[in-house]
Amino acid sequence: MEITIGAGLEDVWALTQQPGEHGRWDLRFSQIVPAGITEAGAARFTYTRRVPFHTVAGVGVSLGEASRPDGSRTSALRFGTSDRLSPIRAGRGYWRYVPIDGGTRFITGYDYTPGWGRMPDLLVRPILGWATAWSFDRLRIWMERGEAPERWPLRSVLWFWQRGRPRAARCRRAPAGGSRRDDHLRDAPATLAVLPAPEPIR
Image 1: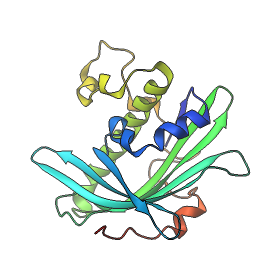
Image 2: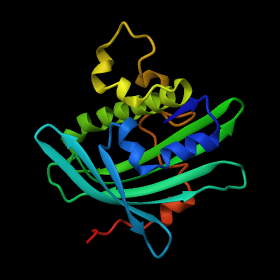
Image 3: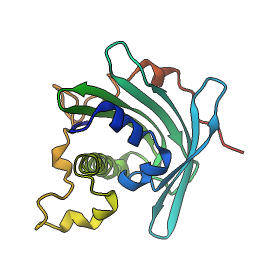
């Protein structure tokens, strides 16, 4: 999944690597709070996702590469929760930042272990994919037009008279040359393979 953002790589990296800003544009998380660094140099964090009448809480680790030979950057993460009401039990994924003329290709790949079993996940997985794509476009609008994410709450999906509203359709949902059912982690950075599962934070 990817979107092209009309902003420099340094700017996209700086904004998306701020945990305090993450919940402002990404529907998948309500809040991310740093929780120290592991001995291997990975950043630990806690996260929450508020839904009606409940808040899912979990832990995660992330590891960034701010300098790669090809000029790109990556950020890998793993996260999980013991909350039985969460549709996602544990997940892993990455962001890749690729500089291009006039902007940055912002790419993600992820997979997760369902929390509710296989059948409910047939509904959850496409909803999560849509939420990711919509969030990427909301981020793009923030960076390109300077419009704060709060200007575009989830209900703005129904603001059909607003042609400039965030739209998931602006984000390519399948890996390059493939389909949405392909392995979305096939191009994951090596850092994801060595990133250990997050441990509970005491």
